[in-house]
Length: 90
Image 1 (cartoon, helix red, strand yellow):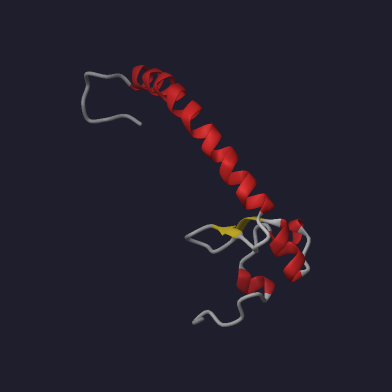
Image 2: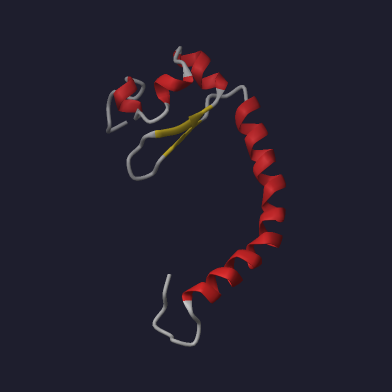
């Protein structure tokens, strides 16, 4: 994204941004893998929803078993659309 300063061109900053992320991402990957395992293998129902829309981004197998859905039926829908959370005030 261009800035108000004319000292750095956008292409120069983009290159700097890409190279500075390499060490950072190598530190994050093991944590993401650990989170993914905990999410997928948890015996408790867990769903990840988009904050602004409430649409489901992912759901673990425990949640699918409890509610009786297939993953493709849930992804992209809200809990209201699925009838899981019928009262928005709850």
